[in-house]
Image (tube, rainbow, N blue to C red; front, side, top):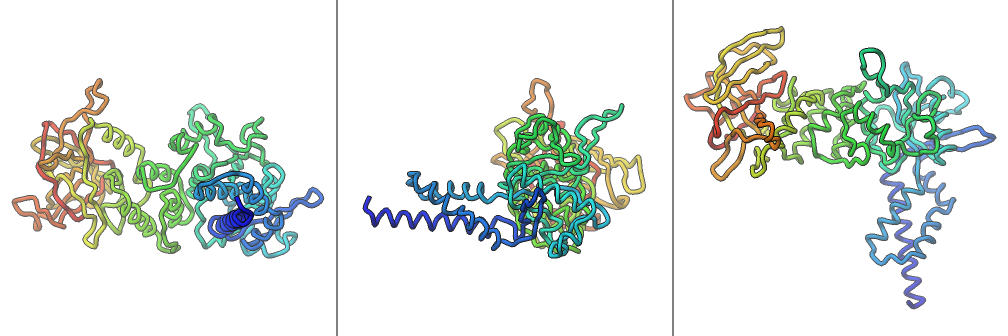
Length: 496
C-alpha cells in the first residue's frame, strides 16, 4: 500500500470513529446525565448535558484510543468495521441507569433541584438513595455517568425507552422473592408491579438487583455485575411476572406476540393513567405522541399503532371492558388475562395444513374492518344476573355456548357469533373439529369468537353484512366447539 493510500485509509477510519462517537452521544445517550466524581472518599454528582459528555470523553482520548486499536485490525468490509466501532463506542461511553419506585410526598430529588447547590437540598431518603446509587455506579461498576428519571428529566415528560447497552441497577428496597406465610403466597417487591419498571427489567443487557442499603440481591454475588446471567434469579422473576425466560435473558422490542406482552403489563399499575400506554411504547417499538391529560385515549392510540403493523387475529384475545373509542378494542392491558393466553396456545396448536383467520383487518372511519365467519345464534336463556352482567345461553344448529355478558341488559336484539380463527380453504371459510397436536388426548381445539348483536329494526331475514353489527363485551373470551366437521360458508366483512 502506498503512503498516500495509507493516509487516505487512516483519514477514513478517523472519520468513521468520529461519526460513530458523535452519533451515539446525540441519538442514544440521554439529553442529561449525572456526572459522578469522587473526592476525599465523598461522592459528588452534577447534572450535565450531551456537550459535557462529548467533551469529557474526548479529553479522555476515547476516540483516539478506539482509532489506534482499529488501525491495527485488518477489517476490509466497511459495514462490519462500522458495527464493531459502534459496539466499542457503546462500551466506552457507558452510564448507569437507576430503576426504582418513587418515594411518596415529593421525597425524590427532582430535575429543578439539580441546578442548586446539593448541600442546600441533599437531605432525605430520596437523596440518600441517589447518593448510594451514584456511589455503587462509580466505585463498584466504574461508571462516571448515571441516569435517574426523577432528576434527569422533567417529570412532566414521559420516560425514554431504556438503552439496552446501559447497565441498569434495580433498587428493591425490601426485596421479596421468596415464599411467605402458610398460604404460600408470593411476597413481591412493588418494583415488580409498576408500569415503567417492566421495560427496565427486560431492556438492558446488564441488570443488577440491590436490596436494603444497596446490598446485592444474593449474598456472594458482589463480583457478578450482571444478574441476567443468574438462572436462579431469572427463573424466580419469570414465575412472578409471566415473562418467558428467553425474554428475560435477551429481549428484542417489536410488534409481535401482542397478547403475551399485554399480559406482562396487565399486572402492573401506573400513577398516571396515560403511562399505562406510554410505558409500552418501547416494548412494541412504536412512536406515539406524548399528551398527558388525554386519559384512556392514550391506550387506544397505542392499539391503533399496534394494529397498523400487526396482522394476527390473536390481538383480539381479550375480554372485559372495551375502549370508549372502539368497541372492538380493549380498554387496558388487563383485558389480556392469563386465560386468553392459554386459549391462544391451544388455538395455534391446531393441526398443520390450515391457515386460520384472516389478516386483512384495519381500523377505518367506519370502525374495525374485519372478516369473520358470521353465524347467527338464538338467545335461549338468561340466568345468574348481577348488577353489571348476566349469563346468556345461545344455541345454533351445530353448537351451544354460554357467555357472561357485560353492560346493559339485552333487549329486542338479534345475536350472532363472529368466528375469528376459522379455517380457510379454496372455497372460503369454515370451522371444523380438527384436534390439536395433542391428538393423543383427543382434545378438540375451541374456536375464538366475537359475540355480536344488532337491533331487530336493522335485521332482515338474512344475516346483514353491514356496519349494524356491534361487538358485545364479555367477561371471558368467547369460545365454541363445533359439533360437525364443517360449519359455515364464506367469511363476511364487518365494520365494528
